[in-house]
Image (cartoon, rainbow, N blue to C red):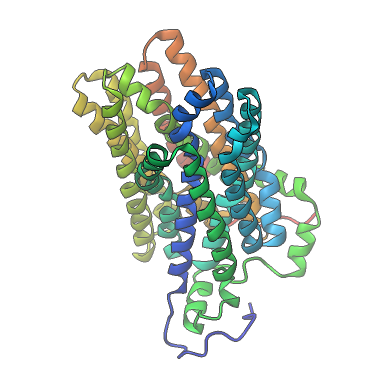
Length: 450
């Protein structure tokens, strides 16, 4: 494929490292993404006191984000493939930050009922606005990184979810305590608006970036990077013109991709257990205080972050040592998810520190195995990187709707978390089954023309 421009006139043998600056930017934006999702969990107690929200109303408000996020994935993927990650992601960051900022003003509405409606609507809108974020990350990584670096790059941006919990949760708690809950939404919204402008200024495709040397561009391209961001070919135009649903049917009809999508749902069951029920488990089943539970809950996040980065490094290291893409991706995924099954062991121990150790081991394993975004970048058709990533993300975040409900029913029916932990561990095993039995060889899919 021809280069689309004259690259940096620096010595062609000097390989620049602009791709790492791009990775840092998407890591920071993804950290903000997860922090903005968590604003309500931090400010919720203060808002309930001010407005008199009951638990049922808060439950509905909490659910608003996930419903919109899941329902918006397919339109977001189509927009990414149609207009590119630079413009769509900038609009996404701007809009979700604006909706975050506006949540600071619901107190002006005067009544608790109006505040509930406004907060629900703004959380719903924020979920829709955030929907392009992770598919855009995958699209950018597929453009900027060769295959032998893609696992590490994907693991790093995916690990931002843990980094957000460690860094922003204490910050937002301090803002709430010192200045009131409104300050959280003002500060987080303002940071996001600044990031939207930064993204527009910094982000370009590798073939268009003025600071990329020819050596770096050739390194990315020869390693399988889609340096123009998408395929500008007659065939690609014909495939795009077949229509969105035709492309969706092709992607869902591919056995390998369907296995990858299913596995992401199962992996996210673990994620949403830790995000929703884990602190309650520590208090109700293990008798910890709220303060103890808050401290303990940060330990799995730290382990998940370290495991996430390690999984990407291990996978890419295997590729550089000559292992096939299939082996290099599957070994960390399967090994990590087998470690995650250790969560079931909590049903058989009574010592708190052993429980915490098993939970941390499970989340560490989940981090190692969370290479799904790298697999999406490796396997998605070049003409539909955004759409494939959106379907993948949609499957994964359905777990955010299903997991809290299923665990709630299990706990309510049995009066114990034992069944809930078995449910979580079983999904880790189903991930292993998906990659070993359904996925088989990992390779890029070629779309059919209509």
